[in-house]
Image 1 (cartoon, rainbow, N blue to C red):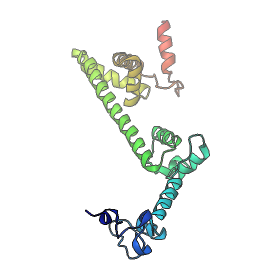
Image 2: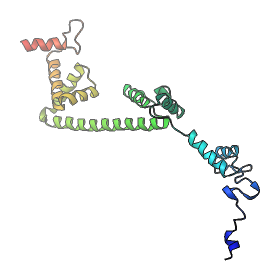
Image 3: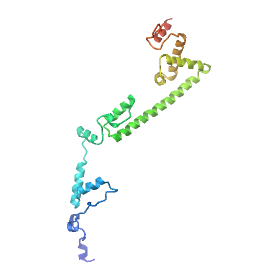
Image 4: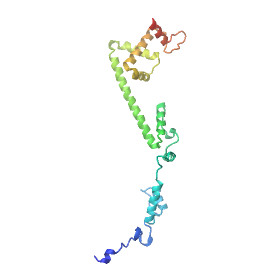
Length: 229
């Protein structure tokens, strides 16, 4: 190879990466936006990339534009999160929060200053976890109730009647009975209902409230009176 050939510059490129004849390195005037995103192509058109120095300037401009606020600047962080979709109130997320528990969860998620997409994922996961735990609790409760009733033997039918009478005497729902069972135990809770059922059977005038009407004696008063006999 001759010395002349080894030192010759590439005829298509000059210093600094500029094209021969100073022609633009990137032309987007007739660019097809399909498959690339019209917004991106328009952005490149508006920032005419005529040479490599323009490309460097654009990269520097982009870096500064995407700079995030620091952790110490709470106001700027809040404004940034609002720009990302963080609503003014929990209602802005659009959750179907109907129960008090669901509303409390929505308020908690909102306090975390999450955008709508992140908030929806967190909210749905918490609700799913709660439902799974409730289902497991009900399953375990039903198994323990069946175990206690299984020990009633030949008294099963009579005890079931007394149980329902005791529950009705104080107006407990199945959920409330389960909650009481969670505090004092299933067997203790059912025995308590059986006791109330027997009291109700022995004294037909007993009511389920402390302020019985038209001569009815309250359940509490009747229990205390029988205790002193």
